[in-house]
Length: 138
Image 1: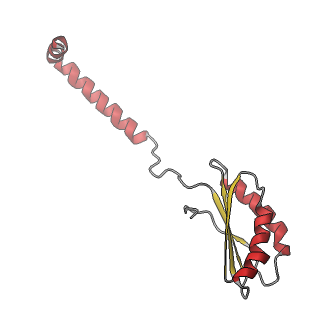
Image 2: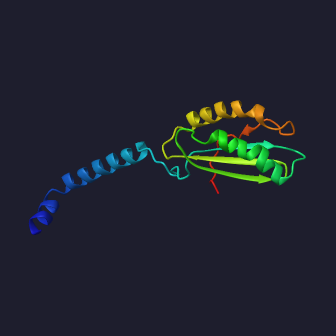
Image 3: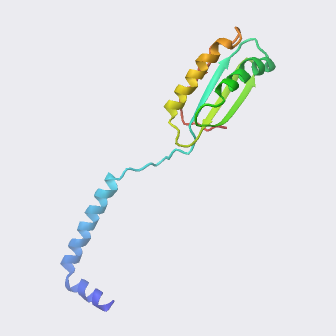
């Protein structure tokens, strides 16, 4: 330890120069390092909403929501399927496995939705896939 201190005092110009070089290199590295301040913590999900004005909650559940659920079962990468039916509105949320490409999943859902849309009751408006956003699947 004594040798290190003596050498640092003897070669103080070299120590200061080395310190400056390390500070410049550290600053440049810190400025060029990509940072993900807000990492993705929510799983990829697709939400489908279907308006059915004039239908009761039970009718929405049996005529709209169940048909959409049956059509969406088996989509590649599907982890969880949740649904909610209220007066005049059906909401189906598809939660996919981590790492699933959201755009590919939306395409698969859109294809299945296109097939089932004609089987929905006349009172129901065409199902809509909500735009992707950062929201929780609560």
